[in-house]
Image (cartoon, rainbow, N blue to C red; front, top):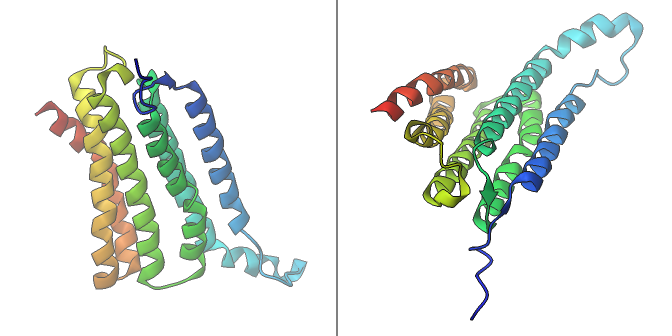
Length: 204
C-alpha cells in the first residue's frame, strides 16, 4: 500500500496561523520606517519638516489600515479553517508574500508622483485579495478542511467579498492613467461597499 500524497495530508492550522500573524505584524511595523524627517533637520526647521511628512504619513495610515483589514479577514477565515494541506500552505505563503510587499509599494507611493506608484500599490492589494479568495474557495471545496457548521452564505461571501475588493483595485488602474493618481486613490473607497454587496450577493 503506497503512502498518501503530501497534497492529501492535512495538518492543524495553528502553526500556519501563528506564522502568518508574525509575518503580518512585521509588515505593519516596518511601515513606520518610511516616516523620516528630511536630512539636516534642525529645531528651527522642525515645523517645516513635519509639514513635509503629511503625504508620507497619509500613505502610512492607509497601509496600516489596509494590512489591519487583511489581517482581520485572514483571521476570520482561519477561525473557520480547522485543517490545512499543502495547497493551503502554498496559497498562504503567496498571500504573505503579497502582504510584505505593501511596505515597499507604500514607500514608492510616498516618494514618487504619477500614476505608476498608485498602479503598483493597487496591483499588490488586488493580488492579496485574490489570494484570500483562493484560500477560502479551496478549503470550501475540500470540505474536510473547514468547519462543518459554516453556513452556505458565509462560504459564498468569503469568496465574493475579497473578489469585489480586488475588482475595485483592478478598476483603479485605468482610472490612474486616464484621470490621474488622486482619482484612482479616491476610487479605492468603493471597496468599503464590498461587505454589504457581498452579503447581498451571497444571499441570492
